[in-house]
Length: 328
Image (tube, rainbow, N blue to C red):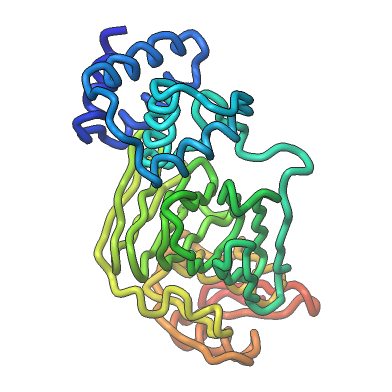
C-alpha cells in the first residue's frame, strides 16, 4: 500500500514517469484497491474544501457517470468531486474508464479497414474526422463507438492525421506497443513479418508505450522498436519521405535489402525467394526512390546495378534472387 500511496502523491505533483503511470493504472483496475483510492480522493476533497465545480469539470463528470452507469440524478457535491477527480485523472493518463477499463477489443465491437498486398495506398476518414492512409498489406480496426473511445489496432503501415480532441485521446495499438496522442500527424509501421516496428512524427507530439517503458516523440523524431529484444532506439530524423508511399512512390531511405524486398513483396503482391543470397548481401543498405507506376522489373534492374545481384522470374508471382556470380 505504501507504493500505491507514493504513486498517488506523485500523480498529484504531476511527477509520474511512463512506467509509473502504467503501474498506477493497473492498481486502479484492481477491485481490491477501490477503497484505498476512494479514501485518497476523499482526502483530497477534505483538503481542497467545497470549491465550485467548473463547466469543464461537469463535462468530465458526466462522461464518467455515463461510463459507470450512475443513476442518481443529483449527486452530492462530494460525490461530484470524487467523480471529477477520477475523470480528470483518466484524461491526464489517457488510459480509459475509471475502474471499468474494457478490453481493447471484443468480438463485434470493431470495424475493419484493409488494403490488400499489391493495391495502392488508400485514404479513409474515421468517425471523428481524423484521416488515415493505409499502405499495401495493412489492416486497421477501430471501435464502433469510436467518437467516445478512439482506440485503434494496426497491422501494417499507416499515416495518421488526427483531429484534436483532448477529451478523447487517440490510441494506436501495434504489436505489443501502444501510442497515445491527442492531435498530430505521424506514421506507424508494424508488419508482423518484420522484426522492427517504427514511429515517425511529422507534426505535434506522441507518446509510445513499449515493454515497461515509454518514449515521448515530437516533430522529426523517430522511434525504432526491436520486437525480438524489446529495445527501443530514439533518433532525430527528417520526416520527409516517411509517408511518400501514400502518393504511390516506392522510397527506400537507407534500409537493408531484406527490408526492401519485404516492401516489394507487399507493393507488387509477389513472393521473393532470397535463399540464394548471402547474409552479407541481404544486410546491405539501399537509398532509392521510384515514381508511381514503376514496374517490378524496373526496380529489380536498378537493384541489379546497385548491388550486383541477379534475379529471375520463376512465374508471374514468384521471383528468385542470387548473389553475383551464381547461376540461376
